[in-house]
Amino acid sequence: MLRGLVREAILSGRCASLMSKNFDPHARIYDATRTFSPGSQKVIVDSIVRSVCATRGSRFLELGVGTGRFALPIVRRGYRLTGIDISENMLRNFRGKLRHSGLAARLLKADAGSLPFADGVFDVVMAMLVLHWMPDFRKTLSETRRVLRGDGCLVFYNGRPRSANINELNDEDGLTEVDIAWQRILNAYRGDRPAEVASETDILEALHQMGAKIETKEVGKWVRKITPRETIARLKTRSFSEDRDLPRDDFIRLVSQLEKWCRERFESMEVVLHRRRKFRYHVIRFAR
Image (tube, rainbow, N blue to C red):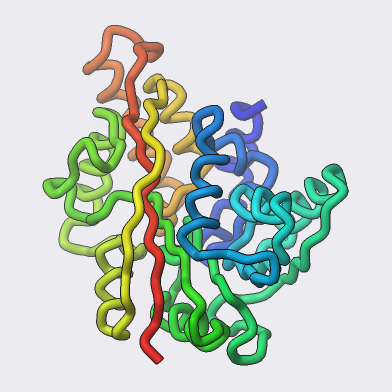
């Protein structure tokens, strides 16, 4: 199924919508390209709930809620949740999950840079795998601070390499040889032109400048097995932030370059590589 949808995504030309960070073309395959190891999601969400000191009356908001990968477990625990996204297809996917589970949440099509809420109405705002997509993530951080209650907090998870500099990355970033080769190909293509996505370091620095108190949490460690063929198939979905600025023809050429590198580097495209993962997130409290 993934292979057919990859072909649809890359050949239809609809990938251009990624430039506006709208995941409508990828809603059907999004969950298949973002997976946790068995049991790890429960551990992660349990840790988040403890870290924010949630009570039964706590009100959660998730920015870029998508298909509800983080939000649905929050709702299942009985918390009130509002989710926003600019992708109607992603929201439709999440609504289907809620109906199937007999649960309810408030889902709105809205922009995280201009939140349609009054000041101080949420206890927790979650920004999971989303801030680096924002054209102006600083504006989103300001909006987040505005809608949080005085003692509320932001939960921020980037899920990307800590730095855009490939020489600063190591095993902590959960990268395989193929991932690193792809980063080097992208860097060579861009030259001195920086990527159009913010790194975790960029976002944390902006939060420090806002006077925020940042507490970093690490929970769960696991190893994900993946082959070069699977890595390239996922890249071809164009649902990842690193390549969103690439014109279609350039993207196809660079992926072909990576595939050639893999065939020269490995005896088989089915060789098993290991991504050593850990879930690192940040709990942010803003100065008032």
